[in-house]
Image 1 (tube, rainbow, N blue to C red):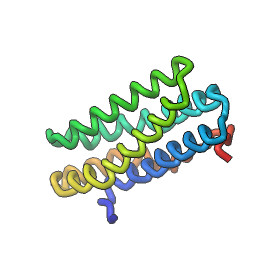
Image 2: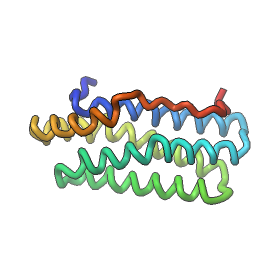
Image 3: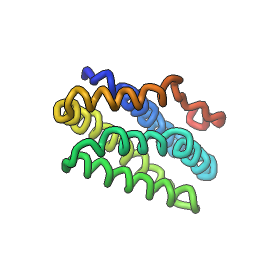
Image 4: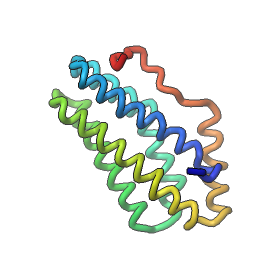
Length: 152
């Protein structure tokens, strides 16, 4: 699917989010210690996902009042809550699996439904302004460089 060039940086971030979900599932399959998974979730939130959510919410979603944007905000809140629950205590593997599933579904929703809607609903100037704000924030590729490769 061809993405408007101005929001491509957010789609690139989504690739990392899908890898995060896959890595969590691999850790569960390998019965990795939950503390290792918890540390990875905290790292990914602090170094990747939190910033990504803030960018989407402040640069893109707030440009139009629509149910699809409200849904994205609500899903961000749900994901933040799950991450908070996971990083604060000992939770069963099911919580990690739920986080991986919900994040993947959220990314698919944004890529397949929300972004195409926004590309049509926002005028070219709004999209260009979003691109101008996102560009400097994504000058370097923000790869997942977590050292404990428990998923391998």
